Length: 554
Image (cartoon, rainbow, N blue to C red):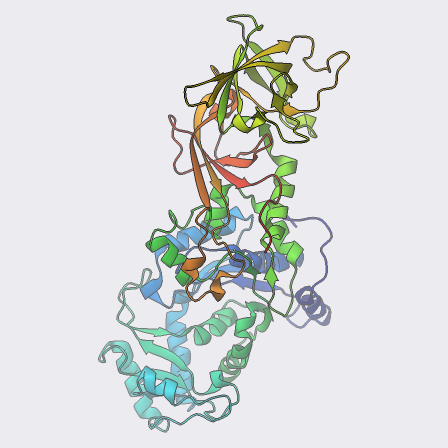
């Protein structure tokens, strides 16, 4: 196993696969697939399915295919396909085969002809509204279409002419002939082909009829030799149709569909339609906005693949839908970044400090550890001179009780540097503090002062040797745990989900920050360089997550 070599906890799918291997049910094979529709960017919910499908294959020396379910060309694009491939690879997985449902369009057509020849499918002239109205209810059977008993020869002729483009969109559909009185509404003669004159991003204008998902999915699985078709719970009621199609066509491989609960994460939505609405209506900057639950957004925010894989493993698999607290994901992110992110200093709201007794024109290069618990990550040089910048809220003229930072007449330690004392305050005409006049104890570099105890430690940067930066403080996109429950999910948008601080100062080492590197800004949070908006002249850092959970509980 290349992703996780630690012992993995049991879950019901692992137990099923283990039992199948023991009984040689699939001739000792394990083959899974991840089959997204390329109609949007992948989100955190897809990550659970990716980790499950690829993980099961890895654990059992099997294969996992990436297959695009590209049967609805009106909403699909090459852009989405490329983003999906990128996201799967970023999560750390490699597919055994790259396939598309469109690869099988000819075979799917031939299978449909076979169903017609067996008297198990018919061409229907009913409109979608008529089909829906005649489907029946949970307590009443459906009403058969007048075309249900159309002769086989006539069905074959009409279906061939549908393919040839003789009919208008929606004029006919091909329906499976199963049971209009079935207690499972999905078995009441479901549509398996419809006419759509839409240009397909792979097959062009070759086809004007396209197969439906329930018909396509099971046959694609069978054609690829999939053994375990792992789906979310909404497909449980579709499993009888999945099995019916394969049984009627007697495919050489009959995959086993197994359902699991989908990921429902608080303070997010995972509907592609609604995510697309957020993008198109410009409530966010794009699919990769760091507030979005997309993998592209999480990546841009600085979340690591390891944190997402850990999260997916931690929440486990069940057969019951439930909501996962956002704090669980944030915990996994913090745990990973706390261990692996380099430390650095950035001042978001600068207050000037002049160290009056520091030698004029002198600059020291202080060695400060990149990670206090990981000496193997080395040290960096941080310039220190007469004028530094600290956070404005690290000084209080009228401090509250138990305040441990800088006050007039008090001392504080600068991170990795000296102890300083505040001697005077400079204010402007409006009464705002613009500068602190301080002194330093030159004998406190790396050691405590003699005869007194300094409790507070604050971060800082050199005014001369620091760099300007824009810092973006991202928070949860929605202000309620389950925004989908709102009458209009847009009303639940958090107006404070993004705060842009345009004039921050970062320590000199961050001038060479690289895309993909994560940093803990001392006492502020975890950050990464923005890969989209940063330039050589403008450094932009995104906050991945705060140092601790400070979200107000309901």
